[in-house]
Image (cartoon, rainbow, N blue to C red; front, side, top):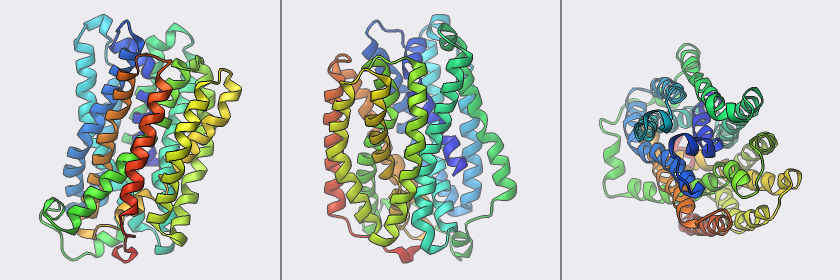
Length: 409
C-alpha cells in the first residue's frame, strides 16, 4: 500500500498545485486556459500509462510481480524528482512546457507498471477471505494515502514557502520529495516476497498480451473493464483530482486553506475504501461496485453544484468530505474486481491494461472540461455534467457484466 501511495503522490502533486504549474509552465492570460495546460500535462501521463501497462504487465506476468514493482518504483521516484528541477517558461520559454510534457510521458510508462505489479501482488498474496479488504486497503486506501501525503507536503510547503516563495521554491520541494519511492524500491527488493500464486504457476505465457487482444472472453472482459475504470477514473479525476484547483478558482480559497481541507478530506476518505472492499466479500465485487457507482452518478453532480455556492472554508468542508469519501468508496472493490476477471498467467497485464486504459480516457476529461467551460462561473456545471455522463457509462457496463469468479486467484 505504501509503495502504491508514493507512486500516486506524483499524480496528486500536479493536480494539487495545478494553478501554480499553470502559471510557471503555461503563462496564458486566461486562467482557465492556463489551468487546462496543467491538466494536459496530467493527461500526458495518463495517455502513456497503457503502454507502460503493456510493457510492465508483460514483465510482471513473465518474470514476477516483485521485479516489475521494483522497476516501476525506481522510475517513478527518479522522474518525479527531476520535475522539481525544471526551469519555468519565463526562463527558457516554450522549452519549459515541452520538457514538462516529456517527463510526464516517461512518468506514464512507469506508473503503468505500478498498477501491473502492486495491485496484483497484494491481492494474490492475501488469504482468500481477506482479498476484498486488501483490495480496498491497497487500491482505495493507497489512493487516499497518496493524496494525504501530497496534502501534507502541500501543507508544509505553503508554510515553509509562504506567498510568492511557493511559486518559486515550494512546489519544487514537493516534487523533489517525490523521490522517496526509490528508497521503497530498495526495501521491496530486500524484504517483500514474490506472489505465492504466481510462484506456484508452472507455465508462463510467452505473450500475455496475445490472449487479451485476440477475440474471445478475455478481450470482452478487458473492454468492459476499461469502460468501468473510465467512469470510476472520471469520478476520481473530477473530484479528488480537480477539487484542489476548484476550491481555489471557484471558491476563492487560499492555497493554505485548501491544504488544511485536503488533510481532513483524505483522512476520512482513507476509511471508505477498505469498508467497501470488505463488503465485496459478502455481497460480490460487481454488486458493491455497481452500488457505489449509482450513488456517485446521482450524488457527485449535486454535491459539486452545492460546493460551488459556498465561500467559507469551514462550510466547504462537508461537501468536500462527502465528495471524496464517495469517490474513494468506488475504489475499494475495483482492484479485486479487475484481478478476478483474468487467470494468473495474464492477470497483471489484464489488470494493468484495464485500469490504465480506462484512466487514459478519463484523463482527457478534466482538460476538456476546463477548456470548454470558459471560466470559473461555468466550471461547476460542466463538471456536474461530465460526472453524470461518466457515471452512466459505468452503471450501464456493470449492469451487463457478470460477477467475476473468485476461484481464479
